[in-house]
Amino acid sequence: MQYAILIYDNEAALDAAPADMMQAYNLYTKALIDAGVMRGGHELKRVKTATSVQVRNGKVHMTDGPFAETREQLGGLYVIETSSLEEALDWAAKCPSAQIGTIEVRPIQQTPAPVPA
Figure (tube, rainbow, N blue to C red):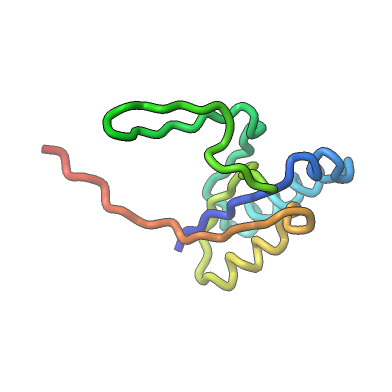
């Protein structure tokens, strides 16, 4: 099954994190690849670059920044494929940001592709 490893950090805490955090991420990514479980992933730009979009009663509303004010912001994600939730949780616990933020593990819904008309 595929899982999203969603990485939430407090951006200020991340800025104050040890300089070797990037190296830790490089090693973590290499470990995912070497184990054959990595299917994709991306680092996201800072939350100040986000735009939230809502449509209410047919009217589009756009707001600079994230939808909700929180102490931690979504900073990136990995998509992995493992044989069990327990294995996915083990990988999440190895993520460098687990030490300063929160890692959310969520199963990816496998939706069949629509049949062309």
